[in-house]
Image 1 (cartoon, rainbow, N blue to C red):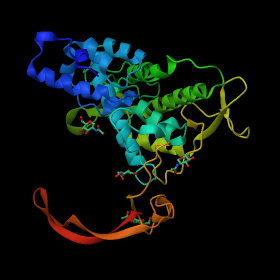
Image 2 (image 1 turned 90 degrees about the vertical axis):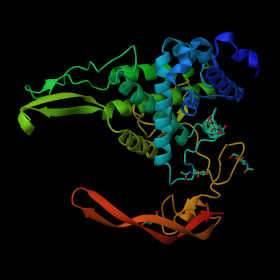
Image 3 (image 1 turned 45 degrees about the horizontal axis):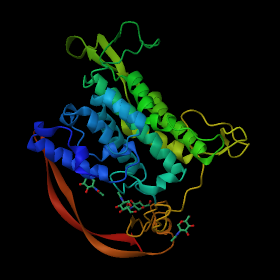
Length: 368
Ligand SMILES: *[C@@H]1O[C@H](CO)[C@@H](O)[C@H](O)[C@H]1NC(C)=O
Ligand SMILES: *[C@@H]1O[C@H](CO)[C@@H](O)[C@H](O)[C@H]1NC(C)=O
Ligand SMILES: *[C@@H]1O[C@H](CO)[C@@H](O)[C@H](O)[C@H]1NC(C)=O
Ligand SMILES: *[C@@H]1O[C@H](CO)[C@@H](O)[C@H](O)[C@H]1NC(C)=O
């Protein structure tokens, strides 16, 4: 990476701008391969786009050609794509907190590292939840008036809404968020073309399917929300709008789809079909995968698995967070840790709660 690339502004640069651009340069120097890196990039502030927008879009690490074009056309959306990716990653880490692979990020460019090169269930989940995060963030940003090309939802009034309720509060613009996410997130898959029946083509179909599954899940969970008006609480008048579900519910739903994910293979015509003929084809909101997961037990450079050495485990649990499964039978070390908690809380009239701080010694178990 030479400095020359970062010098499009000439003498117009102020010191703070230079600091920004220099920071960007060091980021670009790292090999990048996913738009997920927008979640790790602290430079996604609107000012960064106003100054010399085009160079910035082309220098953002991790964008494919098509995504760079979209960045130029929709600069104000980029911040929300980054937020959406971040929301997705955080939810992934919550859902997988008790598992050997816990969705940890390993660097700022590839984000999850080499494990995503395996077409596993975990990869399927990650694609779905991040695409869902973008639908969520962009739909909300529309409603909040943050984007120039969209506003409140213009979804049609649901047929079953009681006649005297008003439809038309400012709703999340799911329609726009869905379409933009499809355009942006899928761009990097759609712009490549691979020979029919090749492993790359299989992976491309897998990614597209799982991206869509994430978006469908957000869309399926959106609901009508209403607010009462009228003389103090009489609720004689209601205004209703379209509201996205809390993102935790999206994460929970996708986690269930992960558990029931469909193993696929490429058939003779180069299409994804269920691995076993006994299963019916997966639906649009189901997750699909092509390869078995590694066991994620040991650190492995070639699979990108970080391994579970050093992970906390639960000695009494028989689940995936239990020491037996988490440590893959390698055993664990035990140590005492001090836990500080709020305790002896008292409610005081009116209205606050006062607590003491208590310390307790607890046992921690850590995989060898
Ligand atoms: C990623 O970026 C953040 C913010 O710029 C920085 O604090 C962190 O050290 C970076 N991590 C790596 C692994 O480069
Ligand atoms: C890493 O994983 C690959 C694929 O599962 C396996 O063949 C290889 O032996 C592993 N390497 C180490 C050092 O465990
Ligand atoms: C996830 O696992 C990595 C190593 O496998 C560990 O460093 C990290 O602390 C774990 N994160 C959580 C939230 O447990
Ligand atoms: C460990 O697992 C047991 C059984 O599932 C559960 O009751 C307990 O709360 C867990 N302990 C911790 C510290 O999570």
